[in-house]
Amino acid sequence: MSQISEISPKHCAKKGGININKPRKKLFFTFSTFFSGLLLIIFLIWLTLHPEKPEFSLTEADIYTLNISSTATHLLNSSIQLTLFSKNPNKKVGIYYDKLLVYAAYRGQQITSEASLPPFYQSHEEINLLTAFLQGDELPVAQSFGYQIVRDRAAGQVIIGVKMDGKLRWKIGTFVSGAYRFNVNCVAIVAFGPNMTSDPLASIQGTRCSTDI
Image (cartoon, rainbow, N blue to C red):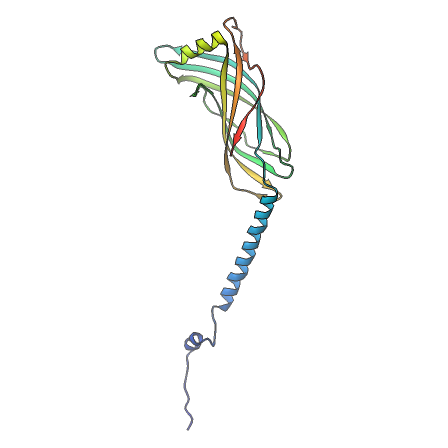
């Protein structure tokens, strides 16, 4: 008499007779291969078209107001009009500017409130004109501020720093990168002699700005 034994499907799977996880493993392997290949292609494109930093230049800075409203509390009122150019030096990479905040500084002190510029897209090798009106109402400054302004006026010029903080994204074909923070620093040399009383006080020459990403 022959012996009949019954083996459950679970037991067979353990023995290797039935591999119930094989389709999932195959799907996971296919997806991993495709995703890895896509990342490699994007990386090679990025390596080939490594984008250059955008270029900024300050063409004009006009000072309409720069005075201390109270010598006792050292509060500053200021108003400055800026004109800048922004250039994308890349031949095959576009730039999305998502955030742009501009303000002016004097000897390390912020002398205007931040002004927000509208976001925009900059195509390959495109140049854009940017303008901003900066204003400060009763901003607290150091006690030495008034003395420094008087000394610079006696020297015939005042040096104003223009700062820009923002976020940008690179566009390569249809691929758009994540956001990168960037900082722009410009210097404006403004004629400011003791006999100059008419507004505005205009910058002497344009300057190229430094950009850090």
